[in-house]
Image (cartoon, rainbow, N blue to C red; front, side, top):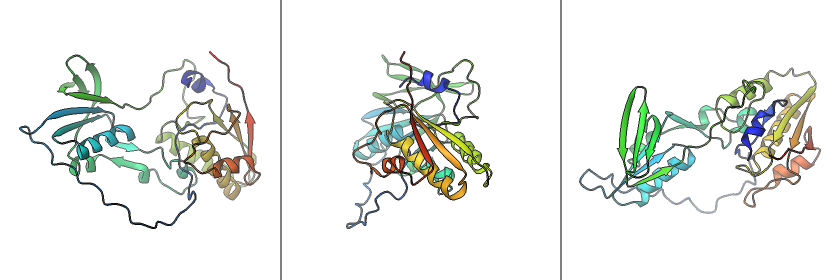
Length: 275
């Protein structure tokens, strides 16, 4: 994905490319009870540690790795390094726009990893990784900490490259990371006059990008909300992909809604220049 080109396209209001979940998608009754959660192995003491693993990044990937290393590893001491005190899930974040979820319900801290799974959580920024000595330098304020490991897992997530001339993205909130941009977009949509008319633009970047159906799910949720709350507005989707993107494990309902006239959605194919 060419992030620099996509972010520098400043003539649109919205940018959708993050994973979201389609609400009430193909509800099925459970016929069996879920299996009980597995019990982690006892937290190793200094004298019983067999291996030390450092996980950099406390997002979905990092937190999951840390958890299951403690569940499945015997004598593995796991240290998770994360600069934030909590993580905001992208999954289900589009439901914040329609008022069906709150940002608080999508925000998770690391207390359970610590108390239940015995993970050591260190808050700070990783400023250096010595791949020869397997040593990580963690900076917090003016202090530095050096941590040694037998294995290092790097899962820092994504961040943005600076694009000269772009300025603030407040006029066109993105969907790459849930958080302040999600709240901003929700407030912008809510501020639209109920009796007003106009067009809202949502862009979908050219694949590949993470969670292929995410932008289409967001478009349908916004379209449904507009129909009920702001019926004078139309959502125009500028799609750089000729074909809808879909995972085989995900319902085709979002794609059906995009192709129908159920909601006030207009889809337009756009071409993106190649580098």
